[in-house]
Image (cartoon, rainbow, N blue to C red):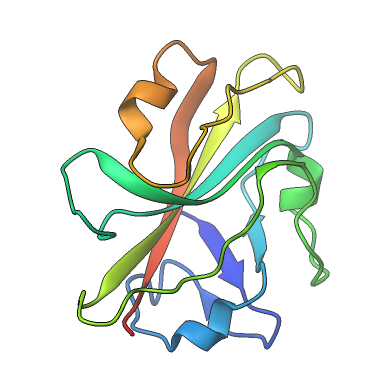
Length: 153
């Protein structure tokens, strides 16, 4: 769906290699997120979740990142720098526990329908994050773009 993720070391995940299995060290630092179809006049919210984190209950995820009020212009940027926006839950790198198998790390980008006035209720915990409940009643459209990679211990 057009979302590109680039590590500090230059490893890119996009539509062409979505779901690739990578060493966890690749994304130890917050990557650059790019969406070249972003409207430069709009604002976006971005999250990264792990649906395979224990205890693996349907609809519950580990929240690795929540960032809002990202200008579309920033998502179109060509330079390699941290994606600007308001960090509500700062980036936590992939760290699947030993013995839990392969984990998917899904990045989801939503368009904010109320411009840069989006103030999310910040989840009190990263664990057992209920995405569907959190999205309910929000002025968000999408996801308009997404991608994922996989990591194991």
